[in-house]
Amino acid sequence: MVVEERIEAVQKQLDDALQRKAFAECGQMQETMDDLLSKRDEGGLSKVVEEAEVELAVAEEKRDFTGAAEA
Image (tube, rainbow, N blue to C red; front, side, top):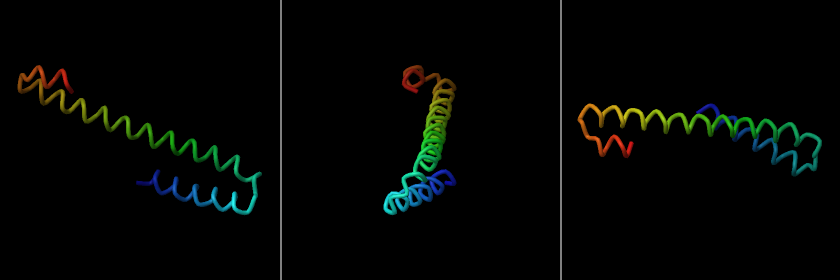
């Protein structure tokens, strides 16, 4: 996943900057990290919603109303 790779790369850069005590560089890197984490979370949530919608549609087709309610 591209987002995960970018998170890993920014984390390495952030760790390096902290180790070098280059704190002036850390602010921008942390903002980038926050943006990436937000994107990762959004992607994960939309996938969960999509899967629930598919389960709901299947349950409705089977007239499994209990299953539809759970989905």
